[in-house]
Image (tube, rainbow, N blue to C red; front, side, top):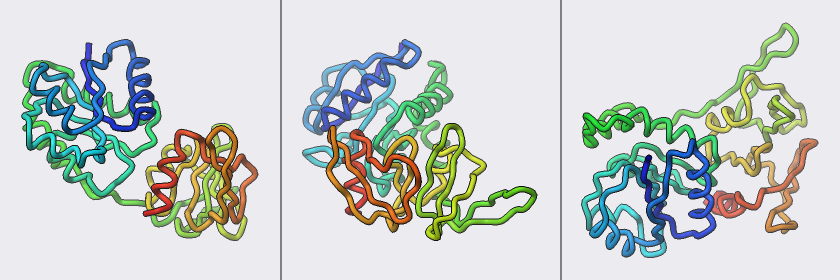
Length: 254
């Protein structure tokens, strides 16, 4: 059984993460959910180390890196955050993975697979050595400047900067450029999302990724969601799902 601790100051995000973890293969348990630096320090001073820690970075009483200065944490950490600028710092503080909010089951499962690969065996549990190996693998993210597209027997490319949005129709993914032309892509939407610069593109729902330059208006919508006006607009629902609203607003304000 993998014993985990969640450090997260947003109650809905902590609850969602806990629920996702409990659904995973039945081998993950949440030992504690903590919401501040102060509470986390007190917990680690009293209780045995868990197998794995999920840690938000921006907490109500400061950056969670402060926890490492006050107590000795020997467990590996998966950082969860809405910001991408802390990545290198995270990997220097027991980080084995860096997940951008909003979290979903797919990216969480990939992170857990990495944990099991590196830390599943209790023998040779050299945390410092394994973190060092991960750091050596860490490279600054490289995003696609263009995508190769096939139309019939012909090949052509679409510049990333010319893409207004990407959307899914069933198992297919399409890019819509600013001229209103759509292009059938080779990869699925989840894969394409990882290849786009996060300052320019945001996944507002499971089926839609938008370029910030395509967003014309934003309206409050039912159930805590947002309704978008895009130019050009694809023929799909243009809503920001409720769990992605907070991250979407932070992205807009970068």
